[in-house]
Length: 196
Image (cartoon, rainbow, N blue to C red; front, side, top):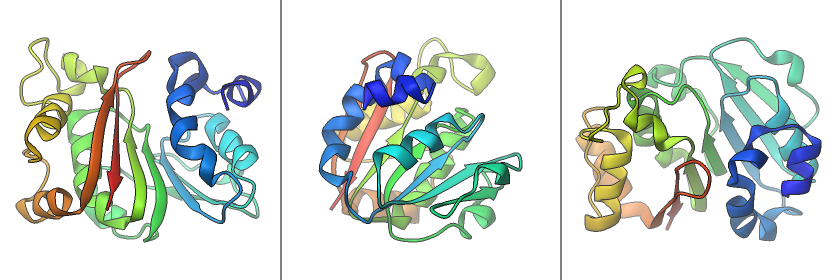
């Protein structure tokens, strides 16, 4: 996967993410799955998913119109990932969701809180670039207090997820429907949450 990522010019290869993803995705690469990625930018990762997952239906979300990247297996949506009314319009029963969007605390936690219920049973939810929890420009802080990363670290330790951006109803859903959560610090910081 990393070799393919380099060919497609996605920065996921440089960040070390693809080494981790291959462990989760290899068994699915020839299956008829669906994958949704938030954050399209230049379309490089959509190209990667198209080449790696030969039978997948691929959805991309971006704040800007990225319809130029659509094809027979790829559909794009234009909208704000922190807008729950927009998130409600996205497809259900997605096998893989990857948040590589705006990386603010509001965006990461709102999206996770709302979209986890759209994840298929046995699916994988990934939040990339959690290092922004240490950056004030993204709503984080050097002490990592009340951030997306601190909320997920507490989730790992206690099985409870709490964030000002996640409703109580959504928190309960996540806590009763997750199978495992791993925070990986290879390259950037990512969280990988699997669903029961």
